[in-house]
Length: 197
Length: 214
Image (cartoon, rainbow over all chains, first blue to last red; front, top):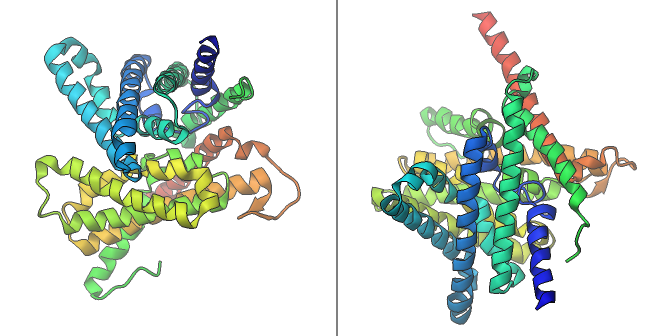
């Protein structure tokens, strides 16, 4: 039991820090650069993102193991996973609008952006590829979500300061954001070797 | 660009414009800055970057052709799910083909090939161009956008492999490893940032000269 818990914790740390989705796997960059201009949007995105990620990881694990493997249609996983994610995002959009308009007003716009995001799709694909158990998939999903949130918040706090900096003209906007991300990524390589799975 | 088979002279300019538009003025990576994930993830060697570019070129062209061919039968209200279905179909084709014929590269970049399905640029072209145009222009638009992506990935991976490993396409060119950081994850961000700034700089100079002539 304790050993299992250690493994889950290691999986969580590995997904959030060592194999951070933004800095070492380079996924979700469009959203990462798109919403990291202000701290407020970054936090809103992080909350929406992590919850969608965990739930869609659970949903697609169930579908993969109880529908796709018995029917022997695992070769359709790209088509099915993107369908599951898109349907889930659409459903939660509708439900949230009806049940809690206040929350929808705050986070609805991020939901619309999420369905075209590659991390949300990458988590089920990696879970299926690594043959994780249900609990392990959840741990991986939470870890990835926390890692992405961490990246967003760090980046947003730097970019708010960067607005005031005197950047050379060709580097203004995205290029300097890329260089900054490169420097953070360099710092994150320090985490590699922290845990060997 | 041997794909450029042209029949009518008055359409010649249009097709060429479509291709140039994709490579230069609407370059996915350097100008629009979308679909950036693979631009950094797979560009630590020239071969991987090139193969990824070819995969995207293929998917983009085929998706554009398919969407243009079926545009009359797709109900506008459900067009996005249909486009996603078409895209994921062609991505599956590419994924399985690469898995069968390019094993070594697939092991390193399989996940990113599968994630072509979430490319904003491909969905955007299907929605903005292919769903409103005939098959031939849609095909050239797809080729143009794909070539632009291929060009960007090739340039990025050229510099990263040369500076990080001192080699090109796996062939050792210089015996030292001048800037090891370039093949690390961090180097990818730095390379894209610097190249983007370089293209901005060229743009600014060119525009300045063009406006001073007037």
